Image (cartoon, rainbow, N blue to C red; front, top):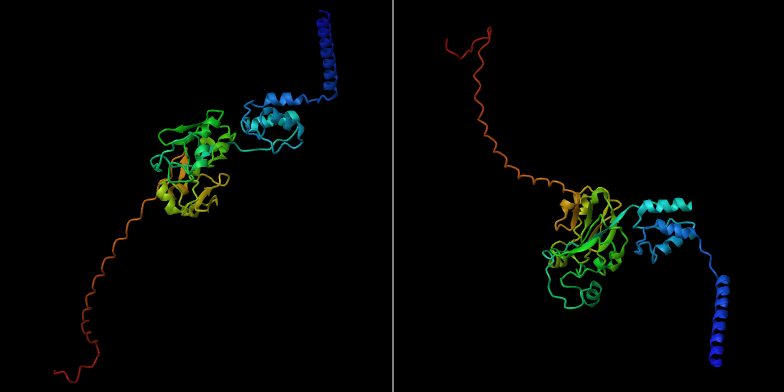
Length: 314
């Protein structure tokens, strides 16, 4: 009995001694945290989406407090207003950044990009992309298994069953970039968000030549360059058989939309420009009328005082 009692007392003494040692060690190596980090974290939206480049809003708040220059930091969910409020609280300057929205650059619907095989594996874009080009003849198009849908924490993107393509709800999209990172085909891009969700962009990322593109997808870009010729703002370039519209230079004039022969340039939120009527063929020129020969002029009457002709009989 005494052995048991001594054992219990010894263990209790060791426990108390260890607790005291741990307490002093914690005090010695304690890291004092700036209380402003808690306040900044409360000002952030708390989505913890990783769109800012940090694991969560806590990491973003810590960076905002510790860095003197926060121009490279931006919270896509909170947007410009949130960053201005944080900058005003910290007494720092926040960089201005235009709002963006995720844009799916693929127009290969089930109708325009027919399936050539059936993938009988895990319904994941990442898995399918690692094994082969996809269920269609286009090696650049959307696989349609919805990895972007799973990655979106804001319910802003869904697969349209009729087209087989993801569609973005611009009102819900926060431009966090999660869907961009999740897409193995890199067909989702963050582009400038226009008022009333208007947009003009090339809905194709294929770099194949025109003949190959048309065999695989009737809505692909063939790199013809007609859109470049009509753009007055130098916003369109063609590289590697693919046209690209710079959202920062584009003025939404819509001229390129009518010029695209395959419909690869997509117009959202606006009506297309009326197409100019084709010029009617010129009518054949009427044959010239033949001119009648000039009538002989009558002989001039003799003037008074002229001498009569000597040969004329009187």
